[in-house]
Length: 322
Ligand code: TYM
Image (cartoon, rainbow, N blue to C red):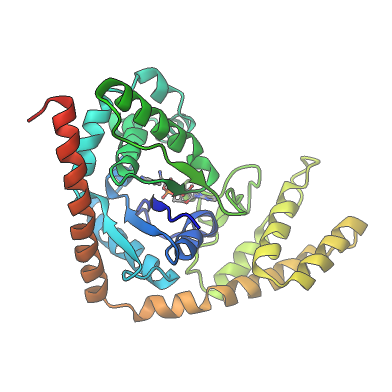
């Protein structure tokens, strides 16, 4: 087996939904056993959105707690906060100077977010993918586990590596993207769109939702949007496939095919199985102390920064900034 160097980040913007979990975090936990892994909290990315400064420290701590409660182990991987390693923003500036504006103008996430926050289309939002490239290339990463919505950003990261190498000599390696079997979990209420907090709480199942909340949200989930494609039903069956046992999935799939499927029954079973799936997570989350989280982040920042400093020493020489 080839040992990869893996890195991924999640923004601290409140609770994680099952899309974040199934598309990213679940995979982080699996990868830490066999590879050299870096997982970080992308706080500088998160300030490109509208946010309340008072809540940010709490959101960072909560996400770090989620990382630990989901099973990330600081003995196996490096866990840190992006802003604790100032080299990320320094490298982003340097990458700004090799990245054509036209490449950023093509980014679909930028277009979507600009549309969502029309009164706050800031330069950071536009430059978001360049900071992401700095996060990744800093650690000579070979693979980036993300959901499908991030593919375009990782592709741009590869292009930025090439732009830099062509201009200043071979320095960065191009990472590949890795996906789980569920790289795009759909919204409960508008299943033609990906699950996303920006759509609203009832579109998402959060991984620390209490069982009652899960059941209430699933009860409202749409099954037939009249689109003729049955996207809502497909999404629910996909969730059954992940969270319930094989027999249950096969039964509901057969009932769907024969037109006898009762969605109220499917939703009740799914609610129970999702609640059970995250029961340990909810329990562990309550047991993790603030001290443990702070220590994890302090140790992680030290380890990450040692590598970042080395990369930056080389980069500064290459670009003629001494
Ligand atoms: P964020 O916080 O928006 O998303 C975190 C991860 O969750 C995945 N994801 C989904 N996967 C499946 N279905 C969904 N509905 C769904 N919604 C979100 C995202 O693809 C992501 O993997 N830009 C990154 C943060 C970042 C980063 C990086 C990632 C900053 N620097 C460097 C990798 C490498 C993001 O989207 O965060």
